[in-house]
Image (cartoon, rainbow, N blue to C red; front, side, top):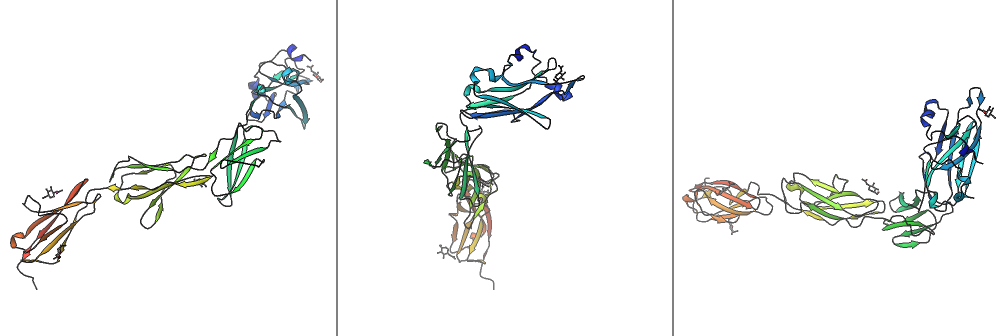
Length: 393
Ligand SMILES: *[C@@H]1O[C@H](CO)[C@@H](O)[C@H](O)[C@H]1NC(C)=O
Ligand SMILES: *[C@@H]1O[C@H](CO)[C@@H](O)[C@H](O)[C@H]1NC(C)=O
Ligand SMILES: *[C@@H]1O[C@H](CO)[C@@H](O)[C@H](O)[C@H]1NC(C)=O
Ligand SMILES: *[C@@H]1O[C@H](CO)[C@@H](O)[C@H](O)[C@H]1NC(C)=O
């Protein structure tokens, strides 16, 4: 058989013509045009084809159908390297013509683009269908996927390959670092926690699936990590290695409860921080294999003293020769230090939150300032002290 070489070869891509008159055409399957096969397996490529039924008054006859690689129109069946490994079987059902190429025991050198070619008895009636099917013969690219059913503790893991594996393939499983004697492509396990899972095809243990594993203990950090001031912004960052990548949940512990925060990502932004944001934060990293919690991160928002409140003890009027305690207190972080001043007096009347005036004299009356101070700032409260001669009735 030498027909192709004696036939003039039409342009390799008469596709544009095909689309305009729809007379010539080939549909490949797999239609995505790419197949991947594991060494030693059997692959099948199929195409459906059509051609103009008539040319003028004479009908068209298909003389030859075959498969080629590259641009050289020589049937695989005649090529030495494919000897005994390829068959092309053709079929016509309900007007649909199709051919299937079957290659057994595929080798890496079979990786190529395979195109179907057919020749009709029209003059120049040969047709090579673009774009063909790309076959990649590779090692098994395995992946493990996880399905949880019923409850989170019941998991099924599945070993699959983007390549066509020989149907008789058996598997090896590596669960939590131990090799498991189980030769099916799926494995079910009743456990809350899977540290790690991988699989391989028996005989090809050198090419295991990438390890999937539960999140390793997430680490939680704040950026900036220095003191956090009221009004500033801080990003909390949770990071955990996991495959598949983990999703994150954020929690804040208050004295009485645990609050789940509105973030699903590995970063949590505290914007324009208020003192109410202080507390213990932690994150939980979770993927299909399990979840793990970080340690707590203490967010301690520093802020200047609020307006101090002043209490007078005993309450009521300040009576001459009596005694009084003036106490200043202010919410502040870090805690405030206090001083009392009397108006127009340079030195403090008291260092500390309490000013005691014993044996009160009239001159002790006047304006007092209580000053609360910390590293963030200071705040004064004013108190007017009026000394009376005796308790009014
Ligand atoms: C092609 O073959 C068919 C069937 O044998 C025949 O009827 C037709 O005349 C042929 N056409 C040409 C162009 O030879
Ligand atoms: C986080 O991942 C787990 C495991 O894949 C899943 O069950 C859960 O629904 C995910 N949560 C969110 C909010 O995506
Ligand atoms: C003022 O404070 C001192 C020290 O705490 C206390 O001993 C005293 O009783 C107080 N005086 C009054 C009037 O509350
Ligand atoms: C508070 O009072 C002290 C003493 O009078 C004064 O030196 C200081 O400036 C005042 N601070 C503020 C914030 O008003």
